[in-house]
Length: 106
Image 1 (tube, rainbow, N blue to C red):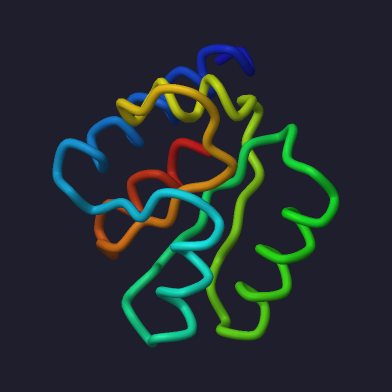
Image 2 (image 1 turned 30 degrees about the vertical axis):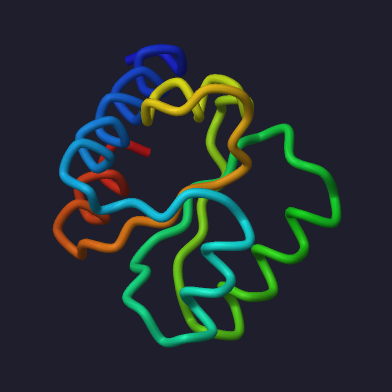
């Protein structure tokens, strides 16, 4: 399968997570959820985030022992795949089974 097809499968899986209401949107909300101990099983980050955003997400996920994956989609594509307009640097998946499904598509 090509990289483009893999990315399309991943974005469809993220759309499913969004429809199920199992996503946290944005860097600040993800960091707050991790700090509060809310369930975040996997963080998906766009490939064009700034260095400071990437470091913030990576540091938080490392500290709280959560998985983080940077995908081959920019912030606009990531936002569109989950039904948001504009840009979206990252999403956090709050369901373990859906996180497993997304990991399988990566």
